[in-house]
Image (cartoon, rainbow, N blue to C red):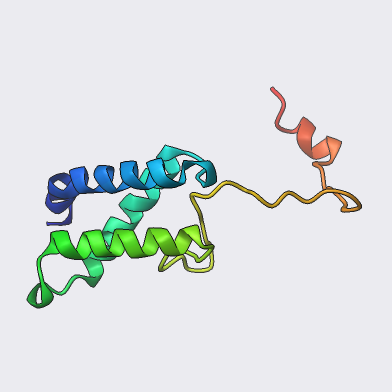
Length: 113
């Protein structure tokens, strides 16, 4: 059922992503990250949808709009389970007197072919 709905409502995902991208692209890392987040939010919308309260398309649009805007403000995706992700660019860059931890040479050498 979920896969069928995904195929049916994928145009909505793409439409919302396109609109959101056009408004906020300077803050977004990539369109692919945004679309992947929208797909994740589709799953969230599917599991939180209550058919007696309205159709799925309306619920999906509401979830996408609210959650993408919330994430744009720095909130985490729902159900992130302690492993938050974001579609935003890393706009805060540490500089100055901070210490950078680089890979140790021995560790790095293990991965060189």
